[in-house]
Image 1: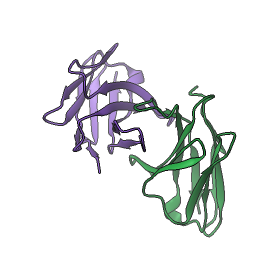
Image 2: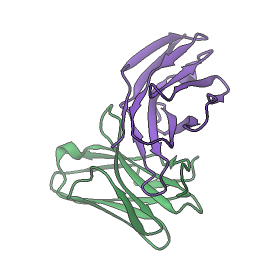
Image 3: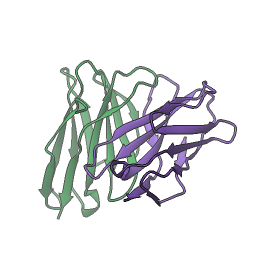
Length: 113
Length: 116
């Protein structure tokens, strides 16, 4: 158990819909990362937050947005969903220090039909 | 921008034998960190081993060891005495040494199948 909690574990929805994925980081970790893993692909970095502030942005679509709340949990919002958005979405957390290990949650499996 | 390349999509190995996974990366930085993560069928991402670029000594964790060649920008993973539980996707990853934006950049992965 990494200590990072993601909900929901599985989600099936239709094209055009909007979903929210939630992540609770490990206790004490200030940094949260979101990654997307499409079928049998590597992990693509989406966005990073540190103590409520956006720190780094990757290949995140404009239809996607994220935020980190004062209690440090984070949400990833995916809107106007397309079939190609079907993927495993991982959240990871770290203390935020240089080269701090990232601890990954179990992922949220999104299926868009 | 940093890139990480894993040139072997899939490898198989007999139980108890040794397998080596390749990874190359591209960066202009001198201070950085390299990682190998394992993703078993459960899909959980598990850290296997890490290497600091400023350290010349290769990292070792039990049956897992790396061959870090900084000049060649190469970071291979050797799994010795392979076990059935080692069957998984293995991802090589890079992290900048800068404090800001210390995200992991992953390679495309290598699927390892350990055969009994």
